[in-house]
Amino acid sequence: MKLSLPASEKTQLLEQLGEANRRFQQIYPGDKPDRQPVHTVYGGANLFKADTCMRMGDIALNNLRTYAPNFVELARVLKLEGHEHLPTLQADIEALTHRLEKLSPEDRKREPGWLPYSIYQKVVRKLQTEAVEDFRIDFEDGFGNRPNDEEDATAVQAAKELAQGMRQGTISPFIGIRIKPFTEDLKDRGVRTLDIFLTTLLAETGGKLPDNFVVMLPKVTIPEQMSTMVRLFELLEQANDLAPGMLRMETMVEATQIIMDEEGRNPLLRIIRASEGRCVAAHFGTYDYTASAGITARYQTMAHPVCDFAHHMTKVALGGTGIFLSDGATNVMPIGPHRGENLTFEQLRENRESVHNAWRQGFHHTTHSLINGLYQGWDLNPAQLPMRYAATYHFFLSSYDDAVHRLKTFVERAAISTLTGDIFDDAATGQGLLNFFLKALNCGAITEEEISATGLTTAEIQTRSFFRILEGRRAGKQ
Image 1: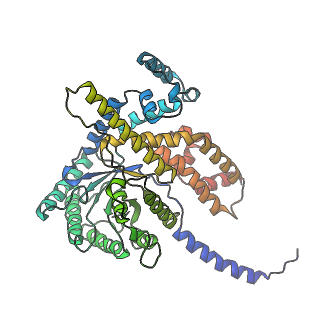
Image 2: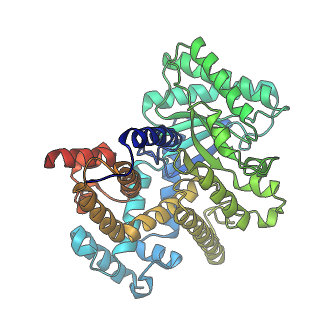
């Protein structure tokens, strides 16, 4: 076969391109298969106790059972698919629940009420077993500006409570602290709290950190704030005999300047790179950001268009970098206005309507985030947890069949291709499809058995890597 291009010149060109491709892949390695919590609960450091996460689960479950004692009530409040066909009489609801309980998962899916039933049962189970996935002990907005002696004492006490929670096994799978920002007026306070907290914690635990521990740095606007945190981490690691790189951080998107700088550029990637690999996530601060955009308090909600703009700018800047993105919080709490035991019928009705209205807002805000590719958000009160999981489970379960078809088709096509050519594109695209199922699995929406409908084995799923799955399948065909 006759060719026009000399082999040596072609090789030189492709080697140069290869170097550029590899540099690109280092910057944009793709989505991480690691577990990402579906939410972060923020609680004032002065209120944190070793069993806070456990108590939050009890409060959340009581809230759900009080205002939606069965799946039919929840379906009607949220107007879930098929709610209009569900029974209204208590006896009929109990009979339907009993019948659905006896069906196999496959047979249950043929019933009109399977989706709201499945969501309700999964929410109850989640609140009983792992109500809080991620918790941030808050020394910033949730704590406020207090006398230095008070914040010092709180940092010591919170660290001791965390150490006790580690011993008792009562803390969330992901946990950390939020310190005050590195602005000129608060940087000294932020550093001091971080030092006191970590020094106390490590002394209490014999030098051990909790699993998935992070430090949240709020109100970041310039890369130097991130690089300063890195240098502080290095000093703290050296002083406490921690392995280099063990301390990790998160940043927050809370100001318009982090979306566009003075030169009209999006500085987010530069800010993340200033963390020298220590930053794992970027969280959106709904109310600080909307305030910085000049939105008055009445209209500062997650549904405001300026939030969507910031979200999309963040995703464009950080897409493919492996940085986890989180949305902010709904500020309407599902708590009735009337307290006490001897409430009138009218007061009970007002409580129920108030909670249900807040549920709907929280459900729709979380769903909106998920549709926009933000798989994590904030919760500020345990009463918000039922709707966090209801919206998350609805999102995954209602998309399950389509996702199974897409991944199954992709796996079959990719498995017959060769190890050369577009393997990186295959792996990156396949990882994105696989991550849907991994996220659903991590939060309890589906089981490993349900992922197997895609044609993947349990062993393949547990690798959490589409690249490894491809390698294994292709090696088996050679």
